[in-house]
Length: 459
Ligand SMILES: C[S@@+](CC[C@H](N)C(=O)[O-])C[C@H]1O[C@@H](n2cnc3c(N)ncnc32)[C@H](O)[C@@H]1O
Image (tube, rainbow, N blue to C red; front, side, top):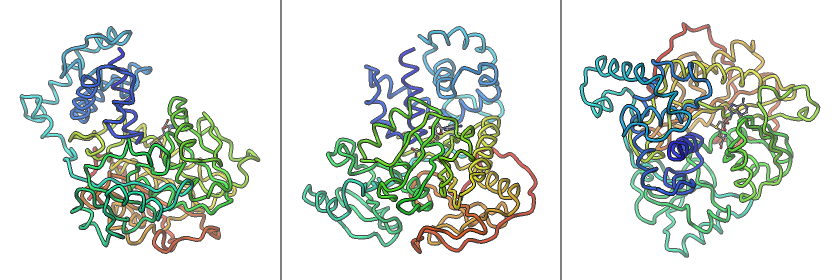
């Protein structure tokens, strides 16, 4: 069980952007690193196939205590790996479902007209191909500043190239060259092979290894110092530490998360990053009362809920074939995402909310935002976020272009989605850098025809 549990924990960490595959594998307590690495890579490679089989066998519905990541690892071993060798209490459970899983696996092969397991990979719609993406590094202004960081890196032999003029320069990055990002302040860009996990500036919390797309939510929420902010689904806390940096540690962040283990990691990360304005609570955001006097000054909410992770760049997985979620999973996730966004909008002093996912599925993105805007009857509207950003929301409803999408192909980042909603009659109290947000525009759309698509294309 130790191997399977460790592999599931690494998959979960990848989905929550807790680190690269390598750092998570080495950070686990599992001794046989090679074995763990191989199992995670293979499970991830077949992620979309496994999701499809688990979904059609209704395994998670039948075994409510079985967590999706562990299910994926166990089903990989059962169907594609060496067979379940351990598995503890889950071994008999999986054995009960074995015939069904094998039948669904065989059915999938027939449906896709393939005979070999390997061929299922090529036939998987939406599989993200490996791209050499740059490494983005956020300078943590709670501990240092851009100039000092650049000087330090230059002294180490890195060669600073100034602010990048566009994506082409970033595509061409190699060796020890590095840029300042063309759009985001305090974001450094290194060549794809750069690994700073052991770098003293990272270890000291001066640098945060964070994908460019994942820097957008806090940046676009832009809470001014002194304000009160809720980070609704906060762990492991990269965006929380970014919010704290924008607040200059002045004001308050109420950070919630359901997962106690992830919150423990988050506490370590925030301490290392020098965050002192954050209250962490192991609480369901949906049960946080908007009428609680503690939150009466909350004007800003960052909502980055659990999602399918279908946009995670294969770079993060260090293997091609990021997952394609089953329709059941998408449906369940989108239900939670709607409830969470609707709940966020019910905080009385709220001025702005940023909704983000690392999913490329419209069901979790544009559809959620559209439904909530319609349901809320015009009290909130979409802001045209970051006008210079090249990739916009899918045109599924009028106004969807105010949202932002990101992808390896168009923005050299993981797949991501961000929407900024602002109270329609409100006065924004934060000075918005021109680059970051444009004019708020009314955007309530006519009710769309509902369709549930697997793995909507993003570009
Ligand atoms: C995508 S991750 C958040 C990543 C985080 N914002 C960051 O930047 O590091 C989603 C998180 O939502 C948490 N979560 C799921 N349901 C929740 C709920 N009802 N209330 C609070 N947190 C929840 C999960 O435990 C998970 O840690």
